[in-house]
Image 1 (spheres, rainbow, N blue to C red):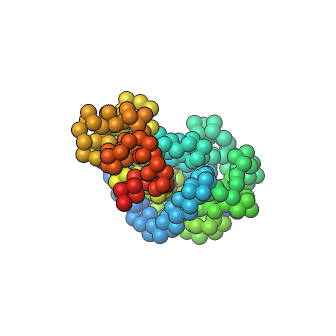
Image 2 (image 1 turned 45 degrees about the vertical axis):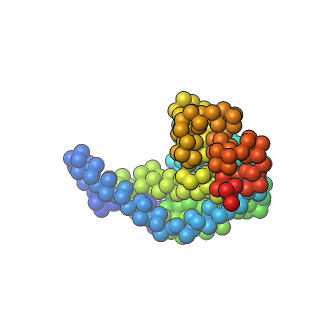
Image 3 (image 1 turned 90 degrees about the vertical axis):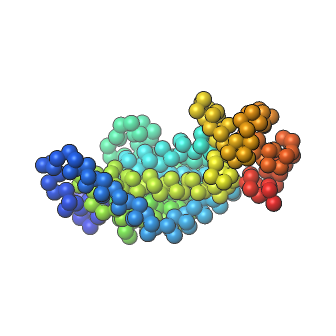
Length: 297
């Protein structure tokens, strides 16, 4: 039997002991007030998140991958962050990977018991041909999920850097990982339902890690996603607007330069800012390791 009594994520919230007799508005108001605590809990973890981002940037620059792993909601959040990276940042789909206990079929339907296997976590990483240049980020609201623990231990044997994200202090996941990120959100409105505040906290932390890491490897100029992929009409319009706003040119010029750059927002911006041709822009970006701003100095 798993001992959950000392985990804050499993405690009953004294503000919602009468949740079933509250009016709809009362219940919504208390949920909103509880959710407001999440950002504050993350503020206390910023130095740890900074360390994690530095490790991720180093791994990506060295050709490694970000590998998220979790079970249930935690695993789904890792998968969500991973699949958003290619369209947003133009990363290879294999560069940011999400693993969930029970395989991808568990994204839409729970696979009962899958999270209880440390060996399954090991096997999933072996199937990815995990290597020492990768970084493994284990996500577990409770901080004691065997699937994640097994994966983190195996990753360290391989020589990977590891990060543990949990919502309880001094968690087992955190104690195993090189860096522990442990925002304590307190008891959930619905006792033990960690898809609520804990899930929100995990999502916010993952947003921070992936976004700022991508800034670190040159996927952003100013606050624009300059490697955005034009996979639909909305993103085509966004690409034009990014070129316009980042360089202060008119729409006609933005469209023309995007065509010359074969759809690359980053190359189009560099061509405009440096007043150069496509090949020169490519050379300058190569020398600056993909950072647009560094081509300007």
